[in-house]
Length: 301
Image 1 (cartoon, rainbow, N blue to C red):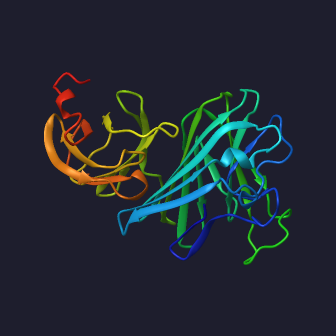
Image 2: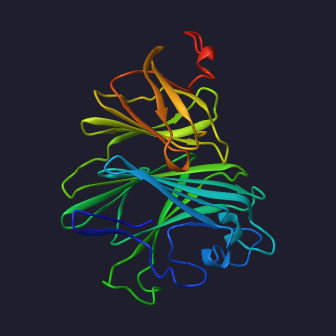
């Protein structure tokens, strides 16, 4: 993941040709391993897929990343990364990882092109014309900054690269870690308001963003499961609300807004993505057409 906006380099992925990818924007794991991560091309089962609709969203999915974390005695039983770009300014990264033991602690590392500022759980970088915000979700994090500029063997252009490390305060063997980025003009004071969203059945998790003139919702299937129904109640909806659902079973779907049918027979796109736009609403129910809408009633909550 690399981010540039408004003519500025903001988030860099540096020296990724190194075998251990020390400067890559990816997880590291402590525990029973030698080097994490190994380069992805050393592991042919790792996948990288892309889907999207121009000016609406781009979606990236990598699976079997656990194979890059010590092939001899794995540190994680499963690891997949999903990235959603919601134009023009928001990127959501979800790392779904299952360490083999809670003692194998993970750390998310992100490389900023200059020294960022930390305010609470929000990290921000301001350059001449642009600003980049980062806010993590999914658990409590310890946030720290490490100077990575001197250890890099090359940089074109030369940058004061700083590594932001997000370390979950508590370990676990089933982690869903969100990193939400927002690009903005350099004079922007605050990041857009963001809240996590969990579906009523707990089968999907997501992020809701109160963006300018619109609300953004991105929902992700928990782990690799494929879904065909989801009910969720986001905090923010506006006159235009953009929804991106990933991990949905291929087919046609009906969308209910506050118990009323809003749209029917919406087709999934590539890589099990489902995109639609609505107006205001408090609760959304998406069900596969002809299969699950009979389960829907005013008491579904």
